[in-house]
Image (cartoon, rainbow, N blue to C red; front, top):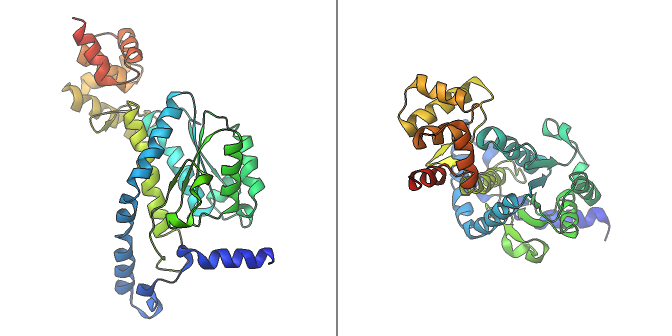
Length: 311
């Protein structure tokens, strides 16, 4: 069988490439009817993701251990899947104060592919393997492949090379689990969303499912690593006016101080929200707040408790 025929057969058998019976006559419908079909199909996505929570749990625990031990979480994908990985990674530093590169995204075709499709870049396993080597992946890292179809050569090449290098591997696909060779990765996450409203347009339900899963992985990992107090982000970077004001509001909500006091404490804390919180709640200066946070592995609650229990 020729390579072209083999790819044709692979694609033909993918559930994401099947026709959706609910939208067969979509080209005959008016705008409102089309919108209702899309919306009804979108409602099925969270349910599909919910069924994968046991596997998402496994993935999160792997990520937490890696980040605690000096490793990174690296996404590899193509097209929509690749863009979603890059977006999730890029949002972690401003949201959770993570160092740039701790969570990173690689897309077939490089940076240009974020804005304009680089056709053919995803067709070669060696491209994914090369990007893994460029990323200097080690056994400390977690490499997460993202591919709605599960068959994207770029992603498969990245996963294979990562395994060779001893890294933990995850895979997010929206095709059924029974179609996946689980031995290929440490954890497979397979929310089955069924055929798209427009056949093969995996930027729709598949993309939504992947985005939800990525949100769950990084957000849960960050909470478990002490990046929140209650349900507020306390390790955010004050890199724009909105985040500066959000930081003040967070300090005010948690401690009860005034706007002016929050601003003053943040200045004393070098704009580090965690330190400002410990300074206020434990009644210590910046230096001691830093020491308490270090003892508490970055957890604000624990840092405050250490101080209060020492009295």
